[in-house]
Length: 249
Image 1 (tube, rainbow, N blue to C red):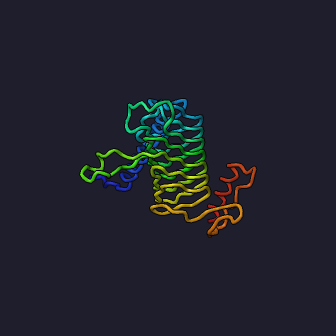
Image 2 (image 1 turned 45 degrees about the vertical axis):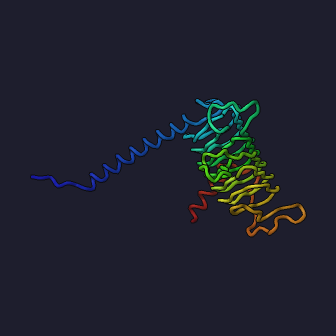
């Protein structure tokens, strides 16, 4: 007598195995991410000129070279696959001074690039979204008879002031100087000087909003300011409020 096959039993067993395998892979990947992260206490193969307390480079890292000329401030967050380079290629002697400097609390989102063939300075508490590109070097095309990639590039220092926010996919070109608390819209291409407390957008980027003490934001902001979290509220209380709101929804 043949015993009928129970497809539901086999399907449940297969799903259980997949869940078990997925959980094992995820736990293993989390362990790899923790072990592969770069910190001051666990620099791995990288020897930065300085890596501050609380700073962390997520694993997997992007291309990193010239680290003896790279200074990272305290409590910086460097996302996965972020490129940090000083000099045009590895193995160069770049002198006594740092080439690439990140202030305290700088955040570089996943897949961002900071290319410092000459000096690049990013001010404290500047936040960059994913895939931001900051470079001190641009190709030149003076000679029409030579391939562009074989012509000597042009280099100019880049300076980004403290407290700035660079949206996803923003590009900062050689010679750019951004003031304090500048907002760069997603996808903007920035060159030249940008004053303090300005918002820039477009390619090439132009100033679309400014702030001063007398007039505030001009043009005026279209949305009300967010309500700040009251002082003394704990993370546990915020989590409880979020769960209550989810239940009511």
